[in-house]
Amino acid sequence: MPQKKILIVESDPDLASQLENGLNDSFEILIALSGSDGLKLAQNNKPEAIILDFILPKMNGFQLTTELKKDASLSKTKIFLLTDNA
Image (cartoon, rainbow, N blue to C red; front, top):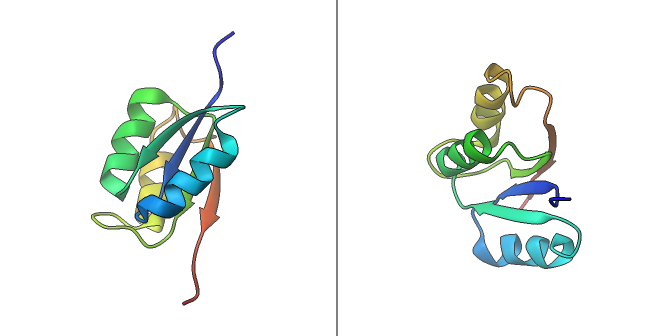
């Protein structure tokens, strides 16, 4: 049985790696460092869930979520939003 996929869209490579390390025993992890790359990976891989940073280069988390919801095959994908108040 193939592992479920989780897409991490996080502009900080260190944080993306930490998230990946915490999840990779149970899921296939995909990582994008920008919103536009995240959209492409989501469209091509149809992950079960997306962990999404709000502040991203090329397309912010809100814009990415809007684009994901327009795609019928991704519109019900679970999205977990990360943000940093600093």
